[in-house]
Structure formats: C-alpha cells, structure tokens
Length: 347
Image (cartoon, rainbow, N blue to C red; front, side):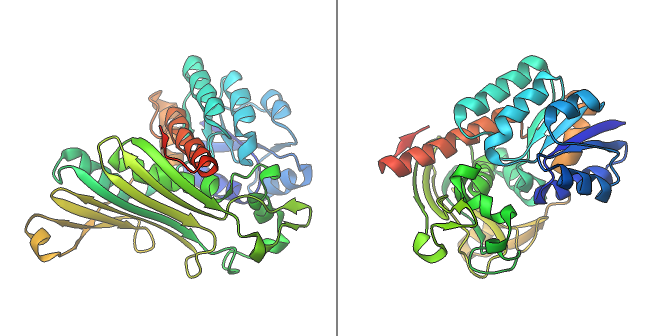
C-alpha cells in the first residue's frame, strides 16, 4: 500500500484526491491546510482519517510514503524541501518554485535523498502529446522549423468556472503578494513544457506580459490585482526552430484550450486538446503536397498520478521530474527578465 499525504486542500487538491483514490493499492492517509476547518472538511469529503493545519505536524503525526503538494506557488520550495528532508517521495504542483535557484535546490535535494520526485505537468497525461514527441524523436519528419502554441482561458471575461470576483480561490491567482506569478506562472508554465517536451530545449526567449488593470481594477477584497493576465512569448529552440507561444485569461470563448502546431522539414503535427487528448492530426508523406491532414489515434497514456505511484513501487523516477521542473522554471525566469528589460534572454 502506497500511503499519500496531501498538502493544501484548495480546488486542485480535489483532482489529486480523486486520482489517487482511483489507483489500486494507493491510500490517502492524511491532509493538511493552514485553514484547519477546510482541512477537516476535505478529510471528511474523501474519508481521510487524519487532518492537520501544518506540514510539520503531519510529517510527525501521520505515517506516509509520499507527499502531494497542492499549495500556492510561493510555498512549493519550502514545503517540498521539508518533505524531501523527511524522506518522502514528492509530487509537486507547478511551477516547481518561485525562481530557478529554489527549483534547482529542490531538484538537487531530491536527488541526494534518493526520493521519487515529480512535477504535475498534467498535460503530459494526453497521449496526443506523448505520440507527437515519439514521432519527432524518430526523425520521420526531419528538422523542426516552426512552432505555434497557445493556452487560452476565459475566467476573467466569463463565469464559465465561476465568478472570480467572489472567491479567494481565484483572487489569489491575480495577486503577486499572495504568491501568484500570473497567467505565465499558472498556465504558461504548462505551455512551455507542452512545446519544449516534443521539440527540445530552448536557446533564447523573449516575452511581453501585461496586466489589464483598467478593466478588472487594481484591487479587490484585500487582494492587489497586479499579476499578469496575458503573455506573448517568442522562443528559439537549440535545434534552430522558432516558436510563437501565447496565453491569456481574457480569451473569451475558451474555457481551457491547449493547442500546439509543429511544422517540420517533412511534415507537420497538430495537437488540439479541445478536440481530443488521445488523437492528433498529422500531415506527412504524400499528404504534404496536397496539404491534407489525417487523424491519428494515440491510445492511452498513464496519468502522472499513476506514474508517480508506479515510480515509488519500482524505484525508477519517471518524467517529468524536479530537474525538468527546474528547467522550465529557468524559462519562466527568463520570461520575467525579458519583460522587464525588453530584450531577448539567452537560456
């Protein structure tokens, strides 16, 4: 039995609890949250016997094999390092930390301790992106030359996920003083992984970030609304390809849309998760000359929760690990630096 303890009981923690409880031989034995009442309610909802109001008490008071960290971004490094120091395997929400130095510290600490460590880049769960990476790695399509990707949400312009003006679960994501790094740190981090996972590492990056204070206001209910709402990124890969990536919370008509188009020397791949997580579109071979796209079924890939538990059982650390989280954190830091300086930043 793999015993899981969950840190943080906000919205995303429900996904962690639901997914872990689906896995045979896996049990959630404890939860904790700085809001003791919320921790108790969460524990009752998922039939978890133990609940705590801080990680130290949970590590000392509940026997567990692994910790799943589902807290605001700014707390990841402190909590992750504490869990690793206690010898726990760790699955951490993204971004891994608030800066590259802390993310690298987490990766190195986990490696020294020999614990399984993974970051929840949840769109790796889509078999479509796994298949795209496999096709590109085979060399069948030749050199990648141009990439276009987007991650679009509309919860600032619609109530598709609820009214952000009335809930701390949303308001903190708009406030840097509450630990948010804006849309770039929240979902742009996924987009950077989604693009560089199949194509390869980045060479340099340029970014423009913007807050639309004139529309949403500068503060609300004790939250300063200063975290970026939209981000435009141009990126050059180490292999020479160019990429245009963009993300926004003002993308009306898009609940949660992730897409990627990869153009290569001998073909192209389209992944659109609004259409399917298990299918991609491909243009290759004779279809190149007629610009014909065909649908390719990609099967199923294990979820990151399944791969995390399996890694604990086998002792073989699956991807994406903390080192990958640090690599993406370095790109995030470069984006913030580029936005401030107005220059291209080498990575």
